[in-house]
Image (cartoon, rainbow, N blue to C red; front, side, top):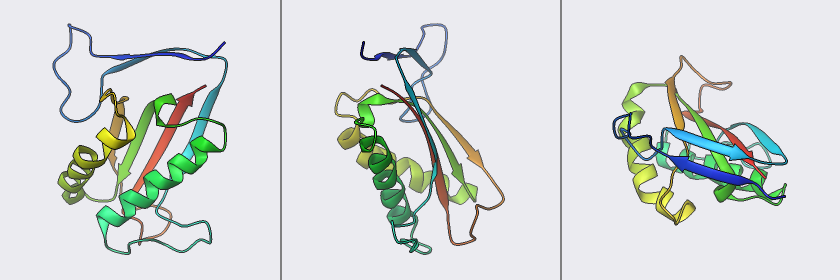
Length: 136
């Protein structure tokens, strides 16, 4: 049995405020819970110090690597939780998603995403972290 993922916006809720959907309904054999990915390369080097866009690109590359390690891809993602270290990065995050999500999600159905502003991440040079749940 493969996963059955339905991502939708109920008529009883307003339109999402960005590139995400309100609800994911999943029937699956297995779930992947991927720790928050940061903009660190495999060797541990931080990508894009003070460059939010470069950090986002590395974060989503790391998510893709984690998904691929289980034979999954972005079509298996059922939820994101995003952590930003300052609200000033919200417009840049939205711009990144507007540009990159149509490539990652060609059907233009975007999983739910909770966006949180936090004081800091594990290292002060990190600006964004994204946790992912996928169904396979």
